[in-house]
Length: 129
Image (cartoon, rainbow, N blue to C red; front, side):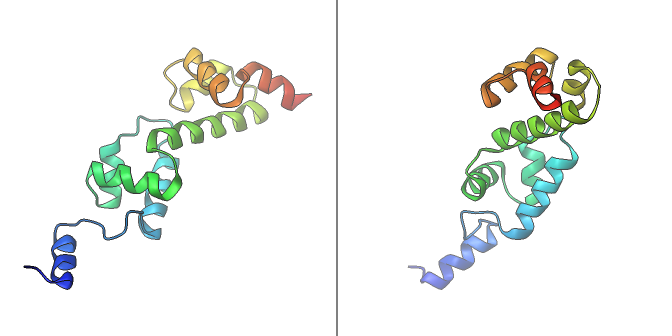
């Protein structure tokens, strides 16, 4: 029968996190990675690798740390960046959608409606008036 200290060593040797959350270093690394790759497809495997975890470990630890699954976080960050461009540039909505990793203008519009209860065009009108 394993003693408690031996059990902890077994977990550490299998790279299993003792905590269910990402540590500060892992969280900073993955958030920086996401922010720097918002315009590209972002996979769970890539994010997990940044943290040195398995996909399963990463998914659980990310949600425990931020309260969102990774996909929700990425979508929200893309919407924030799209809002910034809608406010500050005259780029078309299609160009903005493409630059932040949405598959199409309608994909970004659907996501806007779902998260912000408005469309990108209405949002742009509201912030510019």
